[in-house]
Length: 117
Length: 113
Image 1: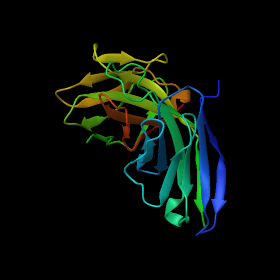
Image 2: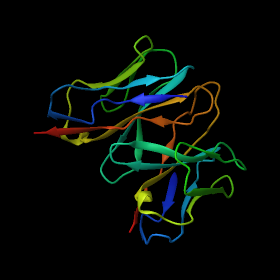
Image 3: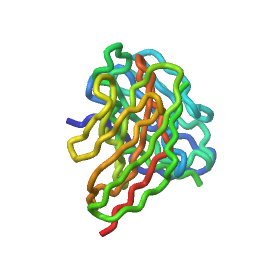
Image 4: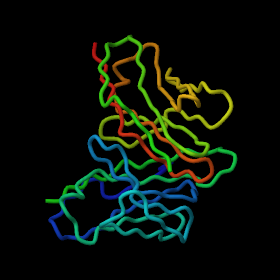
């Protein structure tokens, strides 16, 4: 029962390099999310995908792009990495829209620790 | 839009003492409320949630939280903490309907012998 799987777990990039963070979930969830975690700032939403085929900006989208490849996979791309993007990145998934409130929690991956030098 | 305030960035406490981690939220619509826990070098795990009904919700490991609509609070409490409770705790809110979570800045609970 894998849940949400993120790759890689660690990455060091040089300023200006590009990379893609991969995320896959096996819970048949509709919605997927990318957050970044920085000390003293909690988790901030970068992008989310409410359902397959849709993506929307979150609180801090600048410098990132996303692709909802299919229902299972949601990738985050850094086109030209900057030191300010040094962070821990978390992917999450949930059922999404629910009028009853059931099954509302998000499930998180183990995170990707990214350092940009 | 929703927002969450966790005023305490760090709470030191001795083992077997009670603890309260504070969370206040702001929203113009009805909300769901959550507490997540993050152990060192791990992802976030759901600790407990308030959706509707009883305002007091409990987790399997002895934590509880009470939804107070008039004070817009969802404080987390435990009557007796263990060393293993050392972790970072995040309060989160989502508007009813689409569950896009908004997180607070987190409270680090440090339990010492």
